[in-house]
Image 1 (tube, rainbow, N blue to C red):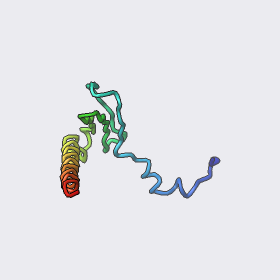
Image 2 (cartoon, one colour; image 1 turned 45 degrees about the vertical axis):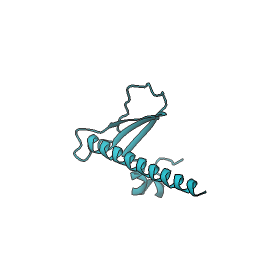
Image 3 (cartoon, rainbow, N blue to C red; image 1 turned 180 degrees about the vertical axis):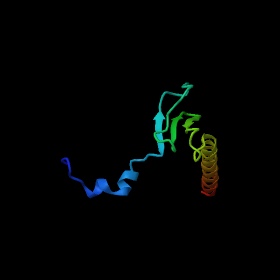
Image 4 (cartoon, helix red, strand yellow; image 1 turned 90 degrees about the vertical axis):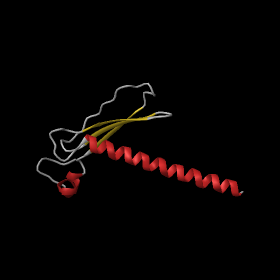
Amino acid sequence: MLRPGESSPLFDDELFAKSAEWKLSTSGLSAGDRFLGTGFGTVWPDGYGINYLAGAKLIKFGIESKHSCSTTSTADFKAKVVESLRDMKALFKDLEIVETNDKAKL
C-alpha cells in the first residue's frame, strides 16, 4: 500500500490509466427464454453497455450508448452484432457440410 506522497511507476503509467477505461461494458443474463426486458448502461460517455441472454433457441441483446456522443451509435453497433452472428452461423453451416461429407466417405 502506498503512503501519502509515494508513487509507483505502474500507477503513473499512461497505459495503466487507459486500462481502467472499459469502453465496452457487458453482462450476461440467465433468466431464461421468457425474460422480456433487458438493460445495461455504458460506463463511459463514449462507450457501449451490452447485456446478453443466450437461450436454447434465441439470443437477446440489450445495447446502449449515449446520444450525446457523436462517435457511438447503438444502431451501427447492433448492425455489426447481427452481421457477426450471421457470419458465425455461416461458418457453422459450412462446418456442418464438411462434417456430413466426411462421414459419408467413411
